Image 1: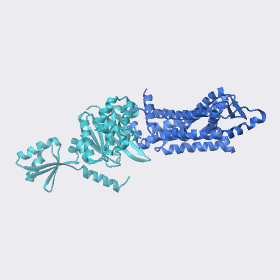
Image 2: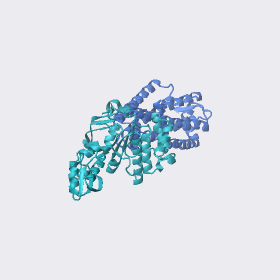
Image 3: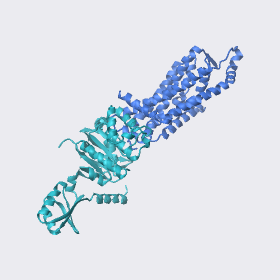
Image 4: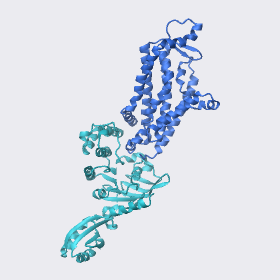
Length: 280
Length: 306
């Protein structure tokens, strides 16, 4: 009960700051623009996508729809969402440290563990709201604007998922995307417990993510060896929701790695926060 | 003697190998307004932070209401209200919303929010964002949040810092009224007159070490920090009479003034003794040497920086 109250408090604080709305604003403005751009170039996308199909099949009708647009948006924009998460999750402890408000909270007869848990839950709630909003603005708006139909994705060639299956697959992919973003939120949260300024955790978390993604993309032997151990390697986990059949074994393995990272980040966060001297 | 509300025992703390609190011990009893005096950088705020478990001591222990803070943890802070240094709040929220956030943490009823807002005189401004508040208003809100859980023991760390004389007076009057309502108050300050006006007991620290502590009367009796000046004629007769009074200590003559140590409750007896002996008493002025003492240790700090 108390944890619920504390988490509610944290959400009031998070949504009392203008920076919280930056993420929603960015998604709310940019995604419709990107969808509009995609709709303008829909013919070109369709031609490029079905070129391979036309060599062997007769393609009737259009494969360009809201589903394909959403799939394209997720491919291009998903790596940028961590920045929006970092804006809030990186600030949730450090921002209060620099503002001095943390010290008022920590002089109450409530354990630091509970206070930190409430902050974590609020950060996770914000993260999942961002993912949900991304889903609404891409899949929701895309399907309303551009219609629905079969979904054509690239996996070992071209794979056509029927319309009836596409909704479920998108649901799964956003669930996986949510899991990835919770790892990002946990990383930001860990950085947030280490310093007393809001910028440090944002830069720190983004630096880790950018370096991790670079390692995932550069074909060098050493990088290839360490790649399986980096959580950023699994940033494209959401794409596996569109494979046929869905590789549940591989997905479970990757989710377990992401979970291990999350637990690691949280253990470090709690160890730091429960022992640190509050000097601000 | 009853169990003290606070017992600080052998408290020690270092930051980056620099000892900022060194084997500090003192006790605060129920009903006291306890002054914690020391120049800037003496370790007052660090001590307070340790009393509130914001900072962990390297050695020593703090007992609040008879329970060890180290062993029992944060729960011991039930019954404690605190304002540590400046009053920092969520600037984008109003005073009422800031207090509501704190109230919901501990299940404090809404009615109590209104009470403390009224108590600190912020009723008219309660719904304005804190960013529009003056420094004095923020300090008053700081005291309001400290009072919110209806504490028995109130810790105020330099509550008048940065206030204008009127604001200082208001805060001091508020502290005195809280004391009259039965709160035990721990007041950290580097302002001597503030502590003298408000406190019934005092601990003086310098460079993290306790210089002296006790009730004001004990300090008056046992140290030469508090002096009473007596302007009397004839002075020699007055000196002879005062020398025979058992409650007069450290009698000395300085030009045309007699200086001595005496508890405030003994002053009328001293005056009566002088007048009955035919001595004309033109003035009895309580003075403090705390200021000289402070200047001395502050000067010492400048000459031997840590």
